[in-house]
Length: 257
Image (cartoon, rainbow, N blue to C red):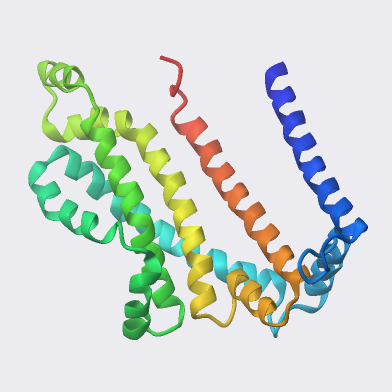
């Protein structure tokens, strides 16, 4: 308990030092406000956009549009990549069908095939959701596959000895044993999807936090750019924290053996 408090204190001190250094640099005037805005100007921009919005959308609307696209694609990935990844690890025939497809597109930069998705689906949410789905599918699929292949054969043989069939082994042995890897994939996929979403909004969008940052850059509004980047960073940390909390509750035995 004491160790956790010390770590939290160190985190707060680190953040405070960064903010103070930021304030000091802008106060001395080493760089122009266009390059590095002061913390106060970023705060003022945040208050102004909260009150008046930006280009016809409120700040919550921009953030909501981004998170809506992200969560929709994320849920689609969860309900497809996890079952397919587990089944691929459990059945070599299924793996032979799916794995080559995943390995083909996985190394490709998401924006490389985003232009194709835009041609097929337009610049609306459909192309972005499809892009996020593809970006998030591979990390979860591979993590699930790795989790199954690392399961000790003794576990499966022990279940067979007790009379379990293949379906029972899958749900009561394979799935629980692969849960730590599944959550690793969930965290990785969320990060990949979030960065991909921001990049996609910068390429083709009319709303969203990524679009807000890009549009502000056209007018050299570094205060709005910094504000958008900070919001994206905080949002990403909070989303990852939610998954970690869920992991602690679900995989409560992790690290105890």
